[in-house]
Image (cartoon, rainbow, N blue to C red; front, side, top):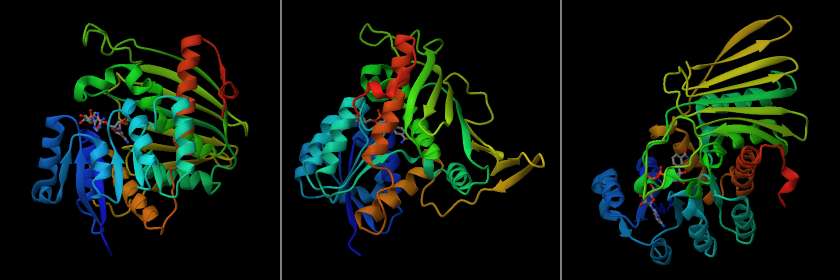
Length: 357
Ligand SMILES: NC(=O)c1ccc[n+]([C@@H]2O[C@H](COP(=O)([O-])OP(=O)(O)OC[C@H]3O[C@@H](n4cnc5c(N)ncnc54)[C@H](O)[C@@H]3O)[C@@H](O)[C@H]2O)c1
């Protein structure tokens, strides 16, 4: 089998995670990277080790795209650069996986959905939480009907503050799309996927109460929200909520997800203890379901999920698997986050119908 030649655009934290995921794959090879900054290119070189000899480094993604060196690209540059880079990639027939969030605004996401439809190549959005072993088993169990008909879904993320990024791009909402887009598109994607219906209304309360208050960049204080409650109504009557705190390093789990149906309740946690807990109303029993994890070439920062995502992306490029996370999923994960920000800013519930979708 011919190896797929990969180009990685943006070689910071996530770009290097993708490089580490690609290294153990027999059917893929990294042939190019691009990053405008020196230090991330050094990180890429260190990550690739003696395989760096197969890689050409560019400063500009347009030169990488024109080089003829790549069969597929991964975009792992800051959120606010995704739209411009996607415009250039989608003008070609090169398959692409773009990191989340697909773009920072709903309008830009809509443009990308249309552009992706106008070509034949795979366009995949990096919403990989669905591949974390506890979450994959959670989705499977809900879909199997083990809790009856789903009525309520609660996701809690209690974690550490945003990390420091190259040029501190993640300190300002104009670059990230806002915390509920940047970080929480992962959770809104999981909600949309678990509920399997369209979100109709979003109510949220949130603020920046603890983190980054004493930081200043170019005379400006960061404006990124660090905690929120978000409630989402779906058109099948299911209610979902997100509880986000980014000053909660001390918890047992970073993420907890609970689904309640008319027959039972299912609890999952990341990292968790290797089990899901399934409760049944009929006899008030709670059963521990063991989580089997599949073979993973590299575990990385995301419990193996970003490796699984790349494997499936490769299969989709080769036509032996579906595009599992398409631009429509990318769009709707951003829509809910954007509506939540709007709800906070305007202190009111936001109907999704307010967006022209
Ligand atoms: N899927 C996930 O769970 C996950 C986790 C972390 C980050 N991300 C996403 O990955 C992307 C990168 O985040 P990160 O944490 O690696 O940030 P980072 O700051 O560590 O890396 C970003 C890199 O992009 C480079 N860059 C800036 N402009 C560029 C351009 N025009 N072309 C190419 N490279 C450019 C920067 O120099 C830097 O090296 C973001 O979209 C982020 O939301 C996803």
